[in-house]
Length: 185
Image (tube, rainbow, N blue to C red; front, side):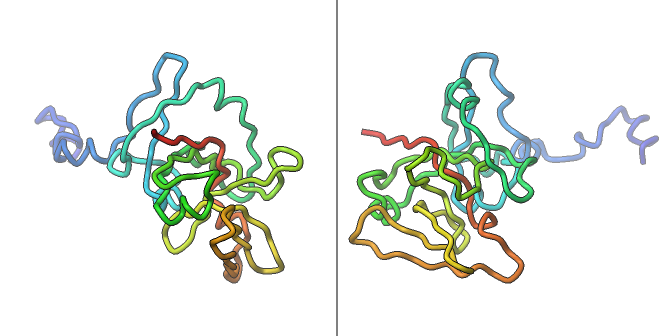
C-alpha cells in the first residue's frame, strides 16, 4: 500500500475527507502573543476528554498566560496528560444554586490539574466542576466517608450526596477547580 501511494504521489491524508480531518484536528496552534486560547466545551467533554478536539469546541476564549502560569496545580490520579484548562458555560439551574457567586450563563474556567480537596487559599472554600450524570455541575465539595457532599452557595437549593462507586476515588468526580468566573452583562 505504501508503494502504491508513493507511485501515485499521495499521502494517507489525501484518502480522507478534508472536512473530517479538520473536525478532528487540534485547534488552533498556540499564539505568539501574551494570551492563551482556552476552549469552551460542554460539561461532559470537560469531564471525560483528556485532549479537546476541534469538533467538541463551542468557542474559544483568551486568557493571559501570566494569569494561567501563576495558578498552582494539585493533581491526584492520572491527569498530567490532560489539557489543563477548559471553560464551561453554566446551565440555568446550576447557576442559581451558586448565586451570587455564579449566574446562569456564566462561563467558568476549570483547572483540570487541580482535583484535590485542599483549599487553594487558606480559609476559603474551593468551587469545583463536578462530573454528575455525564454533565458538569459547580459546587463546593466535601468528602464524608464514601460520599461526595455537594454544597450549593444559595441556601434555597439542597445539598446533594454522590456515593463513590467501587474502586473510584473522589478525584475521579472532580473535573477541576473553578479558577475564574466570567459573567457577560
